[in-house]
Image (cartoon, rainbow, N blue to C red; front, side, top):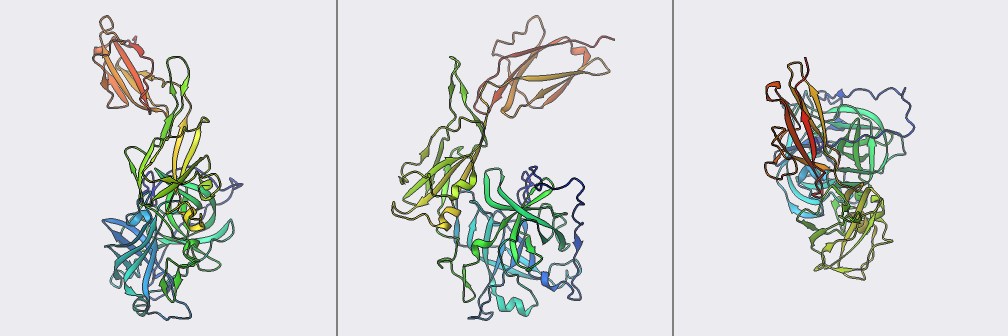
Length: 467
């Protein structure tokens, strides 16, 4: 899964907790190893190990049957978008894909697994979601004949409802484990530049890298309600699947159906360093501040686009407040950010014409670009020294959130001028041991922040420890 960037895939590390949870609440049970040699867990045979481009995730066979068609339609699976080539800024539609998924994936059925090739990416998005709908090189009927059981997708249950996750975390090739826990709403989750809206969290245990794409199933309905995609400390992030409920017709995926909430989308390609995680206002010589700006430059495959800014990622799905339509030849958004420190979002949608209405699906596909605006001011060089028993000194350079790197130099106290720019070098390690035989020593340190501002020069005179 994705953590920082163990994201990739469950892969992230943020700290949040279930609201109003008691410190005395017992933890969820440890995951159970699933066995199926006697068919005792056949309901999980449609959950399999997905392999794409040397990446390992989990995928789930979908039950696409309806009253008008039996089982002759294509077989479809659902997984996390980042597992199969999802790209931030691009809604991928109808593309060939290579890879495979192995069903009947249990520890005691290793010689009875059924591996099927992936055929097409029907839809894949990391914009507000992290989901991919894939077609397999087999029909649903062929897999049913092999004893593979698909899962029906459904809507998320009420806050605090019981759910189960079937997946395999780390030990690739051993088999599924089942975790039971509760799920709740979590408006916004993010990993790196990926921002997911209207997400879910749960406290299932035992998930780790390799478990992205695992199905979250409501215990009351046995419906697949979300897809696990990230780890946030002791919580699992998941993406609801309700947007695809209206996308099936006669046993086949039809993205053009009126009830399908996956299209329209767009493809956007940032230029340069447009996805920046941190920024701050620049301190000028006269004491004033030059505001930070988005500086977001991009290419987009639609003739026009709209944008707005907000401190709430969910606002990206509200059409109110967006700009007028702008030509795709004018693709630099350089509005000021803030000025209040905190998390800010740039919301963007691609459109075909000024008359295009903001449909629910289009707004759900909006891109949320996240940046954290730090408090203004020049960075500070902070150095900690600690004497060692042998008379030497350990030096540690401390990094505030805005500090990217240090430039340092050292030399004899009498001849080293810290204000002379010559001799400075990039600091390679965050700490260093200086033997007592090299002391006394003058140490010069300059911190550089995320926008290239330099701190005041810091001078430290290092002396040998007195016996």
